[in-house]
Length: 113
Image (cartoon, rainbow, N blue to C red):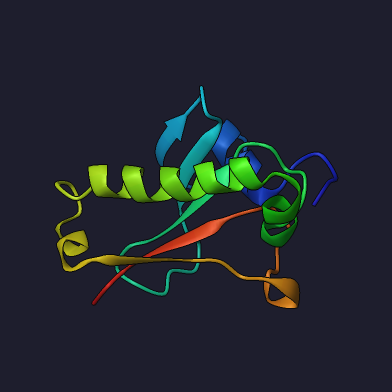
């Protein structure tokens, strides 16, 4: 992984295969499908930029982090008609520390089964 691109940034830009659910070019956030899903719906809400991991984003850019959380919730709710499994609810989670394997800030959206 280069210092300038993460796998998520490459998916958003179309340089790598992957499914983009929603892109917001103004806010520079996207929802993408997780390559290793843990639920019927498992998406990642990610900023376009690849600066640092989730915890660092929370510490350094608190408002942007809160915007990412809001984006994840609002945009996931907008997808409920196309993904009926989301009617059962969904969780938003993130990893901190060594459990975050790719240091690109991200929130996981998982459908409740």
